[in-house]
Image: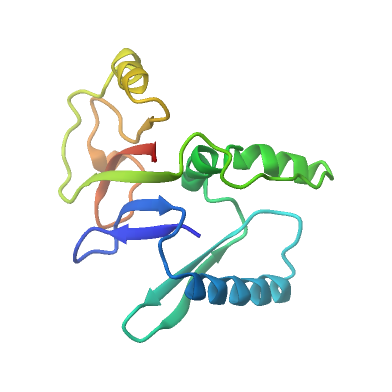
Length: 175
C-alpha cells in the first residue's frame, strides 16, 4: 500500500510514499476489499493496482480505479524497500514461477517518489546531463532521477495530466 499526496487544491500527485502510514486496521480493510474485487474481476497471475480514496474524517474507503497492470512509478519504490524489482517478479510469474519475496530486504526502510511539476506551461531551455544526474546519484545512493521533458520543447509537448506539467520524477530511499 502506497500513500499518495496531492498538490494542495489540485488532483495532481505531489509524491508517493511506501510503505503506507495509514492505520493498520484501514490497510486490512483495503486488502479485504481488494481481494474480493480482484477475485470477482477474474484477474489472476498478474500485477494490478487499485486506487482507493480514504476519508479519515468519515472512515470511508472508496475505489477510484483499478488498473490490470503494474504501476510503473511504484516499481522503484518497492525495489528500494523490498529489494526486488517488480518487473522481474512479473517476468517470473509470466514464465509460470511462483516467486518468493522477502519483505523489507531492500537497502532502505522507506521510499518516496517525488513528482516535480509546474502549473503553467514553460519552455525547457536545459535538462540535466547524464553526468550531472550521475553526480547526484553518487552523492545520494539509491536516488533515481527520471527526466519527463525534453530540452528545446515546451512542457506541454510531453505526456501530462491535463492540470499540470510534470518535468521530473525523483525516487529516493531513507531510514
